[in-house]
Amino acid sequence: MRGLVIAPQPFFSPRGTPFSVYHRCLVMTEMGIELDLMTYGQGQDVDLPNVSIRRGPAFRWLGEVRIGPSALKAFHDGFLFASSGWRLLFERYDFVHAHEEGVFLAALLKPFFSYKLVYDMHSSLPQQLTNFEFTRSKRLIGLFEWLERWALRRADAVITISPSLAKIVDEQQIPGAHFLIENSIFEEIRTISPSPAAATAQTDLPDLPKDRAIVGYVGTFEPYQGIDLLLEAFAVVHDSRPEAFLLLVGGTAEQVHKYQSTAREWGISEHCLFTGRLEQSQARRLLARVDLTVSPRSRGTNTPLKIYEILASGIPMVATRIESHTQVLSDDICVLANPEPGDFAKAIVSALDDPDKSLEIAQAARTFYDEHYSRAVYDQKIKALLEAIG
Image (cartoon, rainbow, N blue to C red; front, side):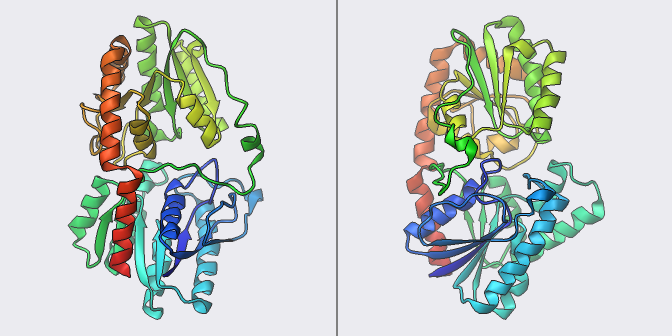
């Protein structure tokens, strides 16, 4: 089989890594599928046998394409859609695997070409507009709700990545097959030419204080991630556990500056370390040094990719009791707390005060990951998808 992958994002970008696209391609090619991948000009090429990566212009002078909806992303989409359409005119594909808004072009052109359409639905696009605080326009949100329903009805197969998204699709009663395939694997991305940052990633790591309990957060600093909640909660934690230290990995320079100011306001700036964005390997090495991980996400329904890696790591985790987490996490494999500073702080202190119980929960989490989200489980789901469109 031969497929065209439309990925509207920088592939591969250490500052906005499309893990899911990479891993979909990796598993498919290991199963003998030949792929052409259409993506933005920004990013690094990766070592994926049987995948031809075809890029649009980078337009770096316009700035970096970031996670979430933006005018710059829409600009890049225009060039991506044009080049993808042009390729369909001259090449024959058995299927088109369209990620996110890439499905709009694929669904529009489908009647003119004899391909099967796979809609890789990583999020509800109308929800993205509000989660990233892009717009409050009811008309624009309503338009994307209509487009989403339209694309779902035209897909031969739909992939969702969380139970909440699966529920949205099931309610639509779509004609195509539906597969829940979580973004639960995290093999190292094999880049062809390492970036300057990656060249030092194996040696340069921020120093962490010794003989202190390290609480670690790794992820983006977008509004829905709950960094404000985490900092306020940690101020409470510090009052009862002054030896605790907070590590925060991620965030743009502007976001880091903002939250460093917030930490100063709470009087905890001397007990926090903001690293900014790091290479994937650096973030993982730092995560291995922490005593406790946290996911303070305050809203949203998609399960964070990092949750699966933390489950597999054997490191105890404290997370907010919201749908984004509870559709995967439970009290048996994680310390859950209400998404408010006092309760979140209490959960962190409880986990630090009873390390034996925390490690017991972490071991249960690792077993749970192996049974439900491991590479073997993931491969079987991709195989079922390919059989459905084959």
